Image (cartoon, rainbow over all chains, first blue to last red; front, side, top):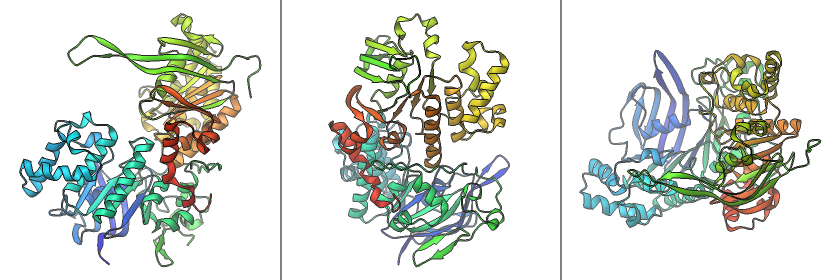
Length: 316
Length: 274
């Protein structure tokens, strides 16, 4: 089995003034080549930080520990990071807000030119040729966007352009960080369909970050659930949705409004601890309806359940 | 659940058109009128829960502004709590608007960072000239109603999480026991688990006060939990109106159909326990 991404006890923190806040703690998972993999979590869960670590765009004040391989190459070992030849070549990134990520001063065609000339030394003519193919792939009419500035495009078109730009690098691992959260419902569907199609057509590995459990269900083969910087559950998406193991996963599923289904929304009290908050025990302890005594003092280690599932909870 | 002695509907809009003046260009001082609401009519009964559903740019927020007495429509009738609010001189309008509660869209930007929570929540009471002790009592009751600890009253907003900020905004909107509660995307900035808490909270408050509640949202699934009836806005026009269950089950307008279809992603069949 070829692995696109392999994280071994990966921790990522940020240095803020004198403090070091760990946003991701000892996370281990693998993403297979060609797989659609979702990382689900709420704000502060560390999901975007994991995405940044994979895509090679951690800020300079980031601190790492553990190990991370992308496309078979070690990119993080301890606090050493080296994404040379990986960032933009093996792995590429679609950000949350396309309007804020495309350069507002460059026409769409020029954005392709800058990326492709710096990566592969393409001329403007070659870059635009390539841009046409990828824009078409992303469902855009090239002539309608190539000489437009980002602000002249609608939100949905901006996101398509950002996806085309990410793919034009030729990278086979696509990290998409909530690419639909700023879009209206009908556009969300289109972008998700687009990502599914591109993945199938181009055989990409798709790593999709979202807070939406249902979206994960529609899109991915396997899902990792994160809470307060820790990976609490991992498994095939369908099984996790049907029969969640971790109480937090249950909560995510039970609290999401589903169209056409009237059921009482289960609301667990409390909110996730903020990053850096000291917690000796399980991070979900305060909110967990099934907590045991041991949960207060010791963080549960990840445990294999069956062949394909993993959960970090003392109940198992 | 209607309030005794108030037979007029909470809101009645007839053929309301409203919009804004925007600059014609970067170098132009001339301004042109851009119409956002185009002939909107709707009625909200006392104690009723209505959702206004629409995507960005559909005019949802503008509709709330019109109801709040903040944007005079160019055409049409606006009757709120039995009063034609735009016939009332602006400095008298508070007598009606102070019977409404309003939760703005973005909790992270809607709180004055220089005020303590106690003073933020007390704002709607300013005009009512209550004795200081009663004011404090009402603020405490409101904070309790939104299930926050009393100690939060001493905090500045920067110390609050997103969910807590939203609760403070709700406390501010209900501290004066309004007859009409207006919510602008009350959960869109929140995480799912916090969203469920806030939805349940809003419903329990609505039931307790017996007030009419209008929730503006782009999320049909959320609307199901906050309202019984809905109007669907599309480019400033009401394209569909009716019981929410019916709209979800058999949408009639093209736009509502597209909206419902866009939820096919979150197929309930994916979940084992619903």
